[in-house]
Image (tube, rainbow, N blue to C red; front, side, top):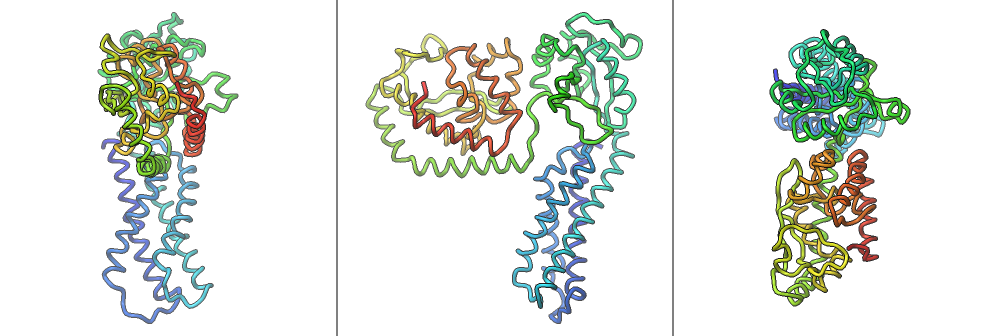
Length: 466
């Protein structure tokens, strides 16, 4: 059984329990909670309405993250989260379904609501318990996560011992280790299979279909970590680091249950589907409003650009978006035509290629207004790392391979890097700005997005662009 089928099984189990629960509740409600003297239930009440209710709970639990990784979820965390979702979801569903119900009094109304909340919590917990037992007893023996360790010293030995003992119950399957760049005593010799040296890591990951890579070298060995990043970025693997003392003291080590192995996940955390939905909704809503309200201003800018110099009003250029997918970005033209006839070149202070009106547009960042169309299309978000050209990405990755982490999310019109650092005039400055965008990836939230948008508006008013 493949991993994706486990989530589908969870969805179906939740659906049928919610479906049956609604039918049972509706029957109890009609004849026991209060004496309903109406006609027998209709096909809508006993067939179509439960179908909608089952789908409703699937969507609610899905947005809450229940189906994201059912192989390795914490049952206690899921029970707590589902209980709150069930209480809130039941109240919303109840008032929609029974707003005009002929319930005789407030006491009966309250009893009906509490009864359904209790029933749905019971069914949801039963579904969670069945999946937990199924995963623990059956699926983890079938679905394995091929894992390799980067390192061969004391820390690598400790990780190997942990993964081969309790790790097997969590689905980890240690297939071997890779020798690091820095020399270490090979304490794994004779215990695990040596798969090669660090320079062969990419080949090993692809050939062995590796799912987890655990870096278990010394905490200060940043060269090895950068080398690992350079080789596995872009591959479908999860990268983990063995925590150092500073990670433990700073609260960077998180475990979902007592049996979890304490490792530090490297890369942008996977936010809740609620956040993704809210972020995309905000993108579409604000971009639509902006394109409508700013249409007169954009019309005036279009005329000014046309009068400033020969050439198109809208400048189009290929940029790299989420998952390395190219897209066309739109901006008001701020340079003279054929400004890059000698090859790509970043603009600097006093750049003679920039037109007079273009200089003002860059100061106010009004040249980026057409990018609201990119946001509507889904190429970009309002907030996210600024998209770059492949020409510069190649240069950045050679020196800072962690830059590829930024390609795992949609690029944005503005970003924490733009607010804290601003525009970059060289590859060195791009790398400096990248540090802020990596911090953003580690702290993504809707509140942070809104703060970045407000600070960006302030920068526009102050005309602090370049």
